[in-house]
Amino acid sequence: MPAPLPTVRFAPSPTGRLHVGNIRTAVLNWLFVRKAGGRFMLRLDDTDRERSTEAFAAGIAEDLAWLGLAHDLFARQSDRMDRYDEAIARLKSAGRLYPCYETPPELERRRARQRQAGRPPVYDRAALRLDEGARARFEAEGRRPHWRFLLPNFDADPLRPDHRETVFEDLIRGRQAIDLGSMSDPVLVREDGTVLYTLSSVVDDIDFAVTHVIRGEDHVTNTGVQIALFEALGAAGPRFGHHSLLTGADGRGLSKRDGSLSIEAMRAEGLEPLAIVSHAATIGTSGPVRIFASLEAAVADFDLGALSRAPARFEMAELEALHARLLHERPFDLVAERLAAIGIGGGAPFWDAVRGNLRRLDEARAWWQVVEGPVQPVIEDAELLEKAVRLFPQGPVDEATWGAWTKAIGAASGRKGRALYHPLRLALTGREAGPELRLLLPLIGRERALKRLSGETA
Ligand code: GLU
Image (cartoon, rainbow, N blue to C red; front, side, top):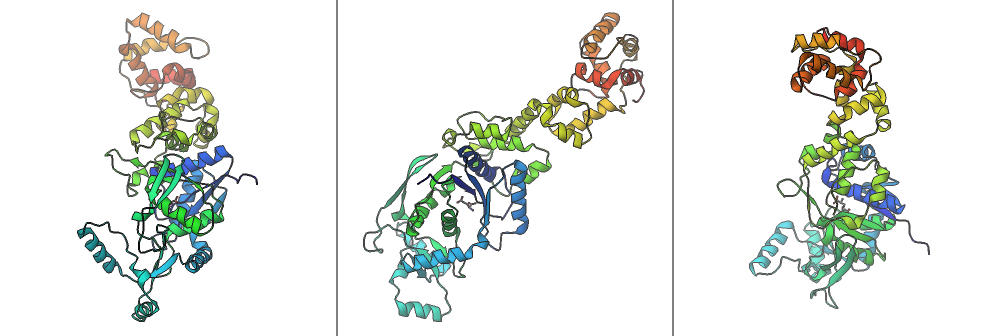
């Protein structure tokens, strides 16, 4: 039999926009499967109809597309209810899904009693003792059952669960053992008939032949249950890899509510998608965070084994620094189109002159205006500027002009250092600081330079 096509899925709930935490899961999945030559699926876990919205669903797709994380497969769980119903019927007929009638307050009271008695608050499977008559009485009272999955943690008598480990080899964390004997049977179907993620996810992973599930380590315990569900549904199940979670600067988990960490906000802020992807691909690995020249380069470099098990701390300053480095290293041909789109000319010489001064690509606009004008010069030292006008070298203005010119002005005026350069910069650019004048001067050109040195707006 040929090896199955590597298939992963990124499965956000459309109950909010993507943020640095969940985008990392998307990036790890995407890089992993591109490197393996397989398929990336976007799956919207939208069984929670109250909190899921179309706007969030569209926003998630938009964020992924903007980051360049194209998907090969798409599904939304709300379209697949029939498949979940079939799985539910199958589990019921195999005796693996049983009806329970306890109300939330009843369950809470029971858990409180268990805690008081020093026992873990695990569901005691009381519903398994109900006979037909008892169930009928509950129904007659108007109660609707919720349905629990009978975990395979007993020999013959489910009322006597046992220590029973599900062991799996995690792609990131190594061997994991989850004790099903200390867990409550999970609810898979609510009173109103809606299915819970634990089940719908397994059904989808089977139907779409998902081979690798890469997700946050908050799902490790779920994995114990889901492996049992794959088995109960007669499927082999995927491999699992659980990455550590990002924390905020305070060491606590990142919150979805922190809007500034959304991809949408970062995009509005003008961050380059490649910086975000590079950061997500390298944070929490054994290597330093670093910039990739392209998504392809990030794919080629990717190694799930490089992920560390320790939580990684997200710091905006680190992403900003990486982003600045991306701009500073970006070759002209990769930005040419975008510069043209915002009306910037000057070609590679302009880009090479200004890129080291940018925190955001569109800041190049302001420097383009310094080149093209009009610039209102700032006159600090009129005497020096007069000399500068007289000494402006003949011939074409090129990168050698600045050196020869300032040398001559220095010799004629006795000025050096800041006293020499600062008045020239203020007159030529109207600004205190900026890109190297050696590179800007040829772009500004003789005519505009001479006007500005004479105090004319040009
Ligand atoms: N919708 C789930 C979540 O966002 C997906 C988890 C999974 O990858 O299985 O937590």
